[in-house]
Length: 142
Image 1 (cartoon, rainbow, N blue to C red):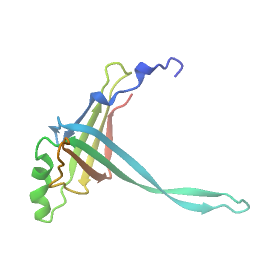
Image 2: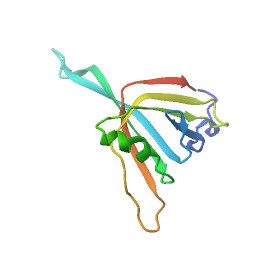
Image 3: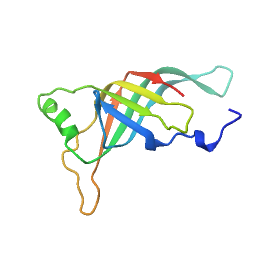
């Protein structure tokens, strides 16, 4: 990229999130990544050890301002019934100064925990919702 300049760096200010098609206005940050699982492969005649791709594990975190009971409503009753619900999470990042937009759909997010109570005097409320997933689609790439 010979013509790269700082204005092309995407700002998280323009990030948006939808949880099962419902806009999450209180979203603060979103991260989803893959951990590549490998097994060691010793090489004959060398001191080096290579590796063999064996799979991946997807994980992420949705961080939100505590402005409502969204996650308790979505997860609480299902968990009590012994059901581990799955969700679609759409992330969009579209900084108007950048070279385009990026939209990625997590197809099968399973949240790892549910915060029922978390507050502290003179602090803004925040919720972190870590999740795992196995499938995703890229909808727009830069």
